[in-house]
Image (cartoon, rainbow, N blue to C red; front, top):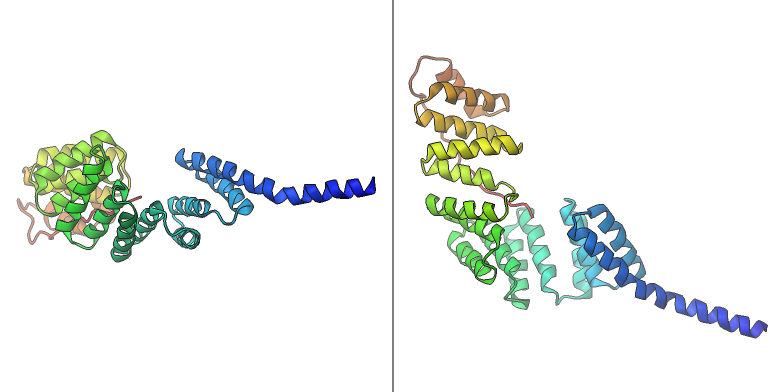
Amino acid sequence: MKQLLSTLLLALLTALPATAQTDAPGWLSRATEAYTAGQLDSALMHVDRAIALDPGSALAFKLRGDIHQRQHQPELAEADYQRSEQLDDGNPRLYVSLSALQIAGGNAKGGLRYADKAIALDAKDADAWYNRAWALYQGNDLDLALKSVRQALELVPQFPEALYLSGVIKGARYDEKAGVEEISEALRLNPAIPGGLMSKAVLQYEAKAYQDAITTFSEVIASDTTELADAFYYRADCHYNLGDKESACADWQRSLSLGDKDAAFIKRNYCDTDANKIPKKPVRKRRRTTIEF
C-alpha cells in the first residue's frame, strides 16, 4: 500500500511541470485578448503568469514588451524584446515592435535598422514599411520615406495611419494641397489619429487657406489640449492675414496665457498699439509632426 501511494505521489509531482507548461498558452491567449481590448493592466498580469509558467516563450516576452511600450516604459519594453529575440530571432513582428520603440524614442537609425530586419523576414508586412517610412521621415529623407509609405499603402490601401503619414510627408515637401487631402481622408477613416487635426490645420495655414484653417484650428481647440498654445497662435495668424485684428489679438492673448513667447512679442508690439501690421514679426519655426505608436 505504501509503495502504491509513493508511486502515485511521484507520478503527480512529475506531472505538475507539464500541467503548468500546458496552461501557459491559456494565460498568453488571455493576455493577448486583454491587450487588444486596451486593458493593459490585465494583459500584464496575464502575461506575467504565462512567463512564470513558461519562461521560454518568445511570444510572451514580445507581448509583454508591447504592453510596456504602450505604458510608456521603454526600458522595460526593450529588455523584454531582447529576451524574445534571444529565444526566437525569426519573428518579423518582433522587429516591427522594436522599430516602433526606437522611432518613438527619436532614434531614426535604430528604427530604420529594425524595420529593415522585419521587411527582410516578411516583405508583405505593411506595418514594417510604415515604420520604415517614419524612420526615414525622422531622418529627413523625404523621398525614400514617401516610397516606403506608398509600399505600405499598396499592401493595405485602407491604412489610415499610413495615409496620414503620406500626407505629412507631402506637406513637408511643400505640397500642402495633396497633404491636406490625404490627411483628411486618413481622419475620415480614423478620426482618433494623434495630432491629425493639428497637422491638417497647419498645412491649411501654410497653403494660405486661412478660413479653412480657422475652422480646423477651432476643432483642435475644442478637442485637444496637447497643442493649445500653438493652435491659438496659428488661428490668430489666420485672422491677422484676413485683416481681423480684434479676433487675432484675442487668440494671441490666449496663446500668451499658455506661455507662447512669440504671442507675447506680438501683443506688446502690435495688439497694444495702433499699428496695422506687426513690426518685425517673429518667424515661426515650422511645426514638426511626431508619432505616437
